Length: 101
Image 1: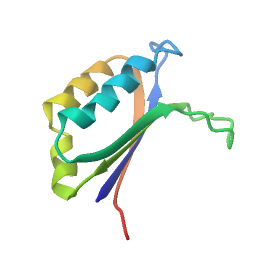
Image 2 (image 1 turned 90 degrees about the vertical axis):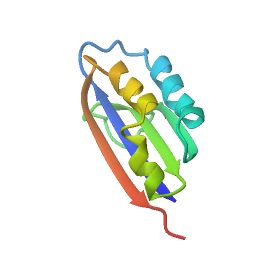
Image 3 (image 1 turned 30 degrees about the vertical axis):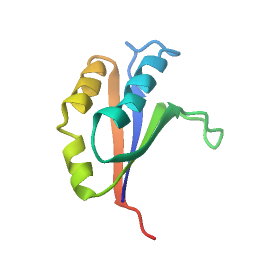
C-alpha cells in the first residue's frame, strides 16, 4: 500500500472557513477513483507551531498499490478537484511513500 499526504496553502482569494466544499470533494474521491483504500481530509488544527506557514487543509489517501497511486493524478475526478483550486491556492506540499509492514 502507498500513502499520499498533501498540505494545502491558500492565497488571499480564499475565504477562511470555506473549506467544507473542498473537504467533501476530496472525500468523494474514494467512490470515484479505483484503488483508494482509505481517505481522510480536514482543517489543520495543530497547536505545535504558530502555523506561520499557512497550510490550512490536509489530505491523506491510502492506495492499494503503486499503480493506483500513479493513476490518481490524471484521473478525471482528481483533475476536477484540482480545477476547484484555481485562483485560491498558493502552494501544495505532497509526500508519497510505501507503507512498510
